[in-house]
Image 1: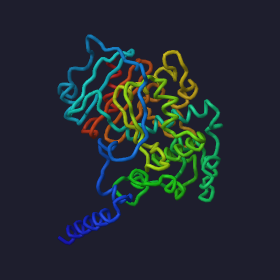
Image 2 (image 1 turned 90 degrees about the vertical axis):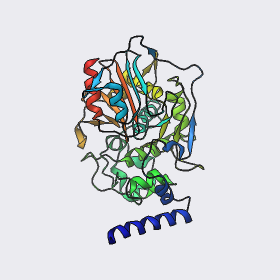
Image 3 (image 1 turned 45 degrees about the vertical axis):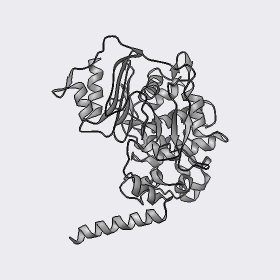
Length: 367
């Protein structure tokens, strides 16, 4: 009874603080927690604009997809596991496309951590253009305010590989933890300046969204006058002939910084085009958008310097040197198998009870 009373008291206290200080991080945490498929409506953002003439995948006249999965009709299985969009694209042809839970092809879904893979693409573009010299550069070349915190030995590659050794709690439950501060906070640059190291860089893989947000600040500083969103528009959204407008959430309206660890808000078909770009080694309809070298480096098996055999440059590797995928909380996925010329996009309200990685690799065997 006492424990229950304490929980109620804590809840009332947090609600009171949120009411008194409606613009603060805690208020956002109280009112919005936890991560939700409608989060794109909650935060300020910068717009992305569709191309004048969009690229459209062909649509198969004879759909090819498994009739059932785990002894359940395929459509029903997807819906019961809280899927809102599912696309299977083979040889640039949509073999299967379904939407559930009131969603349709025009519905916006936040990427969550799939944005990490997009951030990696933009880092590659910046290196191709000479805006960033090398992944071996110390990040203090771009974020000198972190020198006082001992970040001189942390390189861009360490951030890409999640081996930086930063102290960062990935838990979104604690409103005073780093993940919540980054997600709900109103000043990412200020939060970054507080960051500390927990261990020596290059020794151990540890998934932490703080790495990707540091990449975001490195990218912003390298772009000078451009925003990250405008760079995405220039390098990806326009060249890939996206079908729909989109947006990237930022921490605040005035002089905001993109939440590069999450929060790219788009539609399923356009997410699939990001997969197509990498399936084709950075080429889009004859134009090299990002170098083949970067694509190959980003998706290869690499266990050096503490790197994990299932992760490379912000991409997950279900079957190393065979396939790769972007992944976000709540079960957002762009799965790519270049050998099979296969792209799968799954977006959801949550993961459900499905093992999506196993499902994707099983589907790749079918196709």
